[in-house]
Image 1: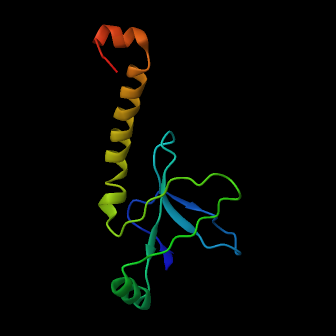
Image 2: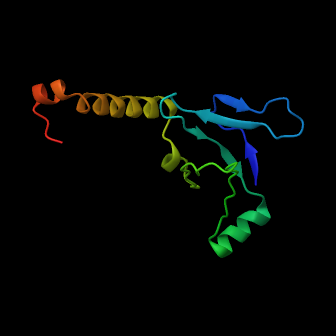
Length: 112
């Protein structure tokens, strides 16, 4: 598989470093700290995946805890669009902020 550019990418990591491939990606809002990349399978890899139903992932952890990751051949399962993702995350952050403050909880009569 190889990394490919895609419609919603907004950053390229490791640019101009000959020892590494460029990593075109979509970096979502800063609080979410999510980076999405797009990979394309060769014809041989596609046949292999079709026959076995398997894809393997290798992540370098540098002896740190593994971070959550998600694989999917369906773009909309990974992200919808940058704007929609940003709004969804912003709403989630507002709800978390509001529910963490006792005064606001009491005013809104939220029982958590």
